[in-house]
Image (cartoon, rainbow, N blue to C red):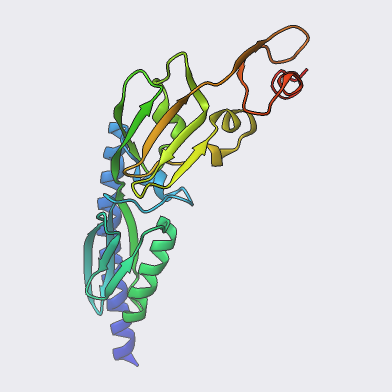
Amino acid sequence: IVFLLGAALAAQEAAAAAGAFLQSNAAQVASNDLADSTPNARVAMATADYPVTAGDVYSLAFAAGTEPVSYTIPVDSTYKIRVANLGVISCAGLTYLQLKQQVEALVTKNYIMSGVQFVLVTPGSFKVTVTGEVNRTQERSAWALTRLSSIVAGTFTDYSSDRDITVASPSGKKHVYDLYKARRDGALDQDPYVRPGQTVTVNRILRKVTIGGAVERHGSYELMKGENLRALVENYGSG
């Protein structure tokens, strides 16, 4: 019994040492991120839907028996990571929290009293191409919590549509988004996070109408196909 208690205590101390190293390292990097206004690991870990992204760097710490161990785990474009010598996890399409659960489960399965800790140290960054009806075609820097509206900000001409923006993935799959709905209705699915390798094409306005008079929302609005004068007054002008 004494031996078992001693081994358990040693394992806990080793786990605590590994955890202290990990937290210190993560805190230092997070502090640097904040100072440089770059992608922020603490913000990412506090965001439930933060997607694992190529370029992310994670730290893993646990006690292997009585020895504290720590590993730096980068994510490359294959989205497969090796967890120490315990196995390989495919993290494509996972959030940070989902990956964390899988890593912790794998380590705990092999080292029951390991005190495993898995944290994001450095979020990945990448480039997104913006083209179409914009002042110039360009590559813009982004990270996994950059939304579409931020990527296109400052790129519009007088003829750019914020209601007809096509986002194409590297595989060629395309989606069309409406940033007006995101602003007006709070429809965040219309202002998604951008992802590595995407191309954003801003299309031209089809119809733009100005409304004034006895309405609550004066201004110019882009009407979509099928929308008429009634839609302009009631839906846009709140008349």
